[in-house]
Length: 276
Image (tube, rainbow, N blue to C red; front, side, top):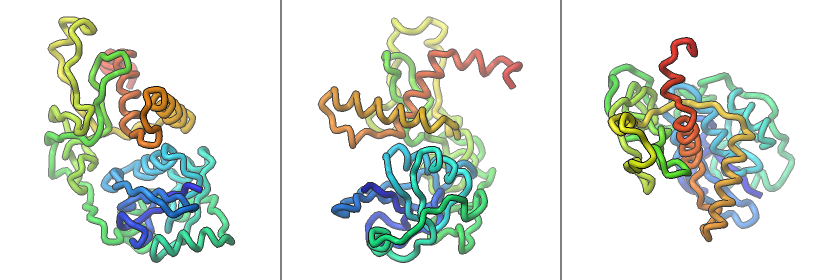
């Protein structure tokens, strides 16, 4: 059984992080053999939407259950729609929590145990648990950022994606490109899908003079859309002889949304004041 545990560290001897949306790490564990993967939580420094982002990440990994200390209403809503069971009230070592879960007798939580943004305050129910979270401030201005994972090219080879990374922008955070703000500098994504030049045959002369930037945005999509992206991405990976379990679903979501916005002429939509 594949489960996800909110953790303060990157291994099974780490402590349970009492927060879900703003936990330091996610440990994805196969309970049959206790093999696991660890992921930094890139939503830890978000001023809002951390619960939805984190829950969507868990859903993209096709987990069946979540072990954590507390869970807010937005994340719980995502889990309910995705049919993922949530077990709250855990504390202590991750390994011990998993063994307790495997022993049975735990009842899933069906309602939020803390309010929205509880993990920002640093109290005992949604506290920092040693994480390096700073309050959201305006001190960094509209600084240039590099973005953490956007970009990529559209399926037809045209256009450079919007990405999901942020600039240093308007938040403190951990300097991971995810701390609030627009990060309006012309940042380019890290990783293998660096923003590539757009083929001249696919764009007009006017478009060639326009630059793209990577922005940090909380975008709500349906659980069904997320599941479709994950399923299709894994199917394509298998067809290409790649390991479908290694698909970076966060990058794929960014790529699909970016392609959609380019194809639907998002610029015209954004400049039309009647849409506001």
